[in-house]
Length: 340
Image 1: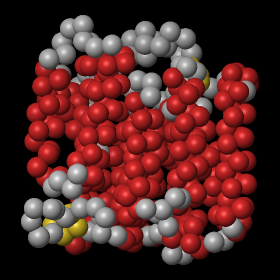
Image 2: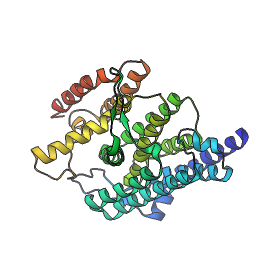
Image 3: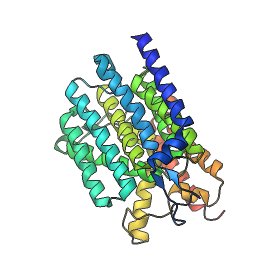
């Protein structure tokens, strides 16, 4: 099995090298670009929106490999699938999320329709796999748990959809989203203490995407964000429900930056600017930082906000103590980035 896994990784790496090398040719053949409008989309020339396709290709290759070998250990580790049914539903929803994101990138689906479809897709997952449902919220500093009882399903679906929305808003400048996903996927493997074929395949895809994204040749697009944000939430919930590795507050801290920024932006749009919460603008954290700092400094600051929560976890500190300091630093930076 080890030998076949090695061959599989060599094949995936080879395919990714071809994708990167031939990407210009592939993107122009498919002709799926994000065209600048000089308002919100400030890039200078059309950029391919095939980032999600790179991720999906790597993910599907890994999932097909698992299906061919039908090795239950590959289903249980990380993804904690104890039945073929839950695994097949997982594959179905991944593809449906990609299609929804692809259609949104192409036709700009209304926020309400997207929201309803996301609720429907996530509901399918949660009603067919109890291990994807968040039943409780746990803390370090107190022994009591906050149990959601009959509200667990509704709360869980809402959390998944909110995370997808938050990470979609977070995807605003090159490399920011890729760094977030790479840090979390890599460290999830470290926390669990197992190398996982599916996660490694995703990481290889993200590295390929990051190179092309850095070269400004491709964006992740909603098709990529919908897949990856669902996977991040799915993995954290599965690990939480099957192990004692994390408290709920640890996971909340790992997701701190995209979540707090999404909440702030929605609040400002609705209550300060009197705009719909999904109104497009340039008031996100990365936009604020770019008003004062260079792109490089902006990425460094954002990356620190992504990595520091994991450093806190590694240091065995109680995560609850660090929410207030991070919130203060976050709003201090927002307040003091008015002009470049």
